[in-house]
View 1 (cartoon, rainbow, N blue to C red):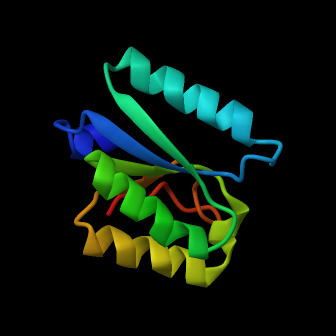
View 2: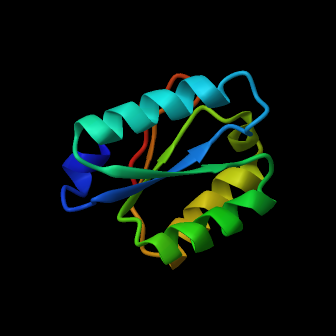
Length: 110
């Protein structure tokens, strides 16, 4: 989905579960494999709380990330985290997609 929205993105940022979560290895491995298969690089940034989101976007901006994916991170159940991701995506002029449908809705793209 992200590459349909931003086909020129050669480097993709990924907001992932925390490194100590049960999903981290699985999701980061799948994301990295998919990026490699598409000739892209992925920059993974684990998110534990909404405070990590700004750090992630600063990292993404410094690495030249052209779009961002959001893995199923329970952190985004907190409305502050969701708002922070949208605010920083706007600030850094990023494209964000979510691989996690929210409460029965389809994945989002901003």
